[in-house]
Amino acid sequence: MDFEYLKGKLDGVIGMGFEYAPKVVLAIVTLLVGLWIIKNLERIIGNAMEKSGLSEDIRPFLQSLISVGLKVLLIFTVAGMVGIETTSFVAVLGALAFAVGMALQGSLGNFAAGVMILVFKPYKTGDWIEIGDNMGKVSEIQMFNTIIKTFTNKTVIIPNGIAISDVITNLSTDRYVRLDLNVYMPYEEEFDKVKPIIVEALRSIPEVLEEPLPDVGIEQFDSHSIILAVRPYCLPDDYGKVHLEALRKVKAALGANGIKVAYSEGVELGKIGK
Image 1 (tube, helix red, strand yellow):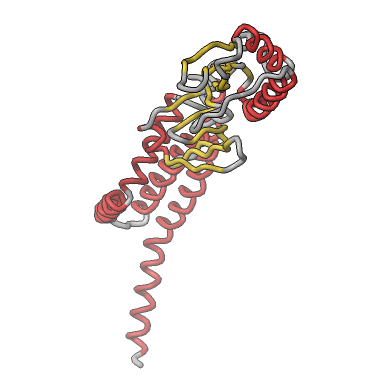
Image 2 (cartoon, rainbow, N blue to C red; image 1 turned 180 degrees about the horizontal axis):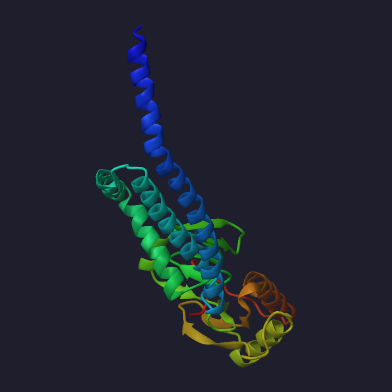
C-alpha cells in the first residue's frame, strides 16, 4: 500500500481529532456540569414544593417531569455542540411521539386523568371511596391507575380515565360513615318494642359511634312484613367489622327477646349511606 496514501489518511484523522477534540471535551464537560446542575435543581424544586404544601401524591410526578424535560434539553444542547444536526432529529422525535400518542390514546387519557386526580384531589391515598361497584381504601394513586383495597382485602385496579368519568363517592370526606341495614319485622310485632332492642344491640358494639346515635325507623310496609331501616354510624376503617357485628348482635338480641325476624327475598344488607 502506498505510504503517501496512508500518511495522508493519518494526517486527515489527526486533523479531525484536533478539530473535534475540543468540541467533544467541551460537550462532555457541559454534560457532566449540566447533570450536576439538574440534580441540584431537582433538590431545590423538591424543597420548594414541600414548603408550598403541595400534595405528596403529585410532588414525585412533577419532579420527574421536570427532570426528564431538563435532561432532554441538555442532551440536545450537547448534541449541537459536537456538530450533530438536531433539526431533523427533533422532527423524527416529533413524528415518533405522534405515532406513539395515537397508539396509546387510552393510556394517555388515563395519564391525563391521573394528573387531574392529583391536582383536584377528589380523593387521596388513605381515603375510603366508592367508584361504580368498587368500594375500598385507596392504597396508591398511580399515573395511569388508582389501586384500592376492598373490605374483602381484594386489590382492585381502576384506570384513572374510568375513575374520573364515573361517580366518585368519597367516604372519608366526613369523619364517619353510615351503614344502611334492613330488618324485616313481622306485622304482629310492635315497633316501639323492637326499636330499643335494636338500638341497645348496636350501642353494645364498641366501634359504633355514640354521636350521631344509631337510628332505627320504619322504612316501608312490605306485603308480608315491615321493613325497618337500621342505621349505625362508624369510622370508615371500622365499616367491615361493624357491618358483621351489627347483623350478629341485632339477630341475637331479637332472638333473646323472642322476636322473630321475617324473611324476604332480595334483601340488601350493609349499604353505606350516602
